[in-house]
Amino acid sequence: MSLTVFLELVEFKAKTASVLPFFIGICFSLYNFHKLHLGLVLLFFVAMFIFNMAVDILDNYNDYHHATEIHDYREKTNIIGREKIDLKLVFNLMVGMIVVSALIGIGLTFVVGWPFLLMGLFCYGVGIFYSSGPKPLSSLPLGEIFSGLTMGFMITCLCVYLNAFEVFQWNFRTLSEIFLISLPNTLWIANLMLANNICDLEEDEKNERFTLVHYLGKQAAIDLFIGLNVAAFMAVILAVLIGIAPWTMLGTFFVAPFIFKQVLLFLEKQIKRETFICAVRILAVGAVAQVISFAIIFLF
Image: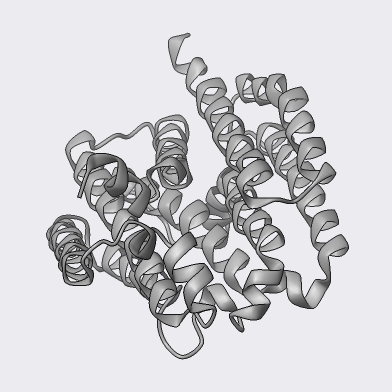
């Protein structure tokens, strides 16, 4: 397997979805708790990144097996069939990654306590059943919710907890503040899946995958795509107003024109190979802008 094929198999281009919530968690920890356990969060980053790759391999593996439009999808669209990758190799690679990431997570649990284990188990459960089982989450009108909350909120929460586990308080205020700071990423990640499902509506229905777009209708789903982008910027304003993020994070709005342009491009046509990249760009640019504008405060 070549490096290019491997990177496509693990959907490396989409890794912004897990990396940026991690960095927002670090910024939030430093700003609100004044704590950073560098060794712990680096181990968590490795485990998170490996598991994220394993989940994307699992998605491709299950999509290959579950496809009903065998010739078109298996042989022309799915990376495993298109590149004729050995299924045993794919399976062993996937299992190996899951085991390695789980061992790191268990080790971290011994250091920071059982809440980390419970949050980790939830993430593993969503990751595995996202594309597995008789009714995978990705084929239901729940995929956007689970992907957004798991990769947006949960990764940020895990990172904050690792850094501040000695003083972390499990109350509504703490969790709601973490939720708010993670909300832009949560919404942009949900939009990533929403855009994917909008583009794949006809193919998904042929393969008996009835996603949120199927139930909402294409136009309503597009309207939701627009609304979630607006809500992401409103969350940035609210986080600054209540004091859980510095005023510098308003710098996120410098990329608003770019994001607006990407939304317009997606509205023109919803074709996977041409405009799905707009949602990826929105997530990448928006999340990077949030992290950088938040982190700037630490220079003062």
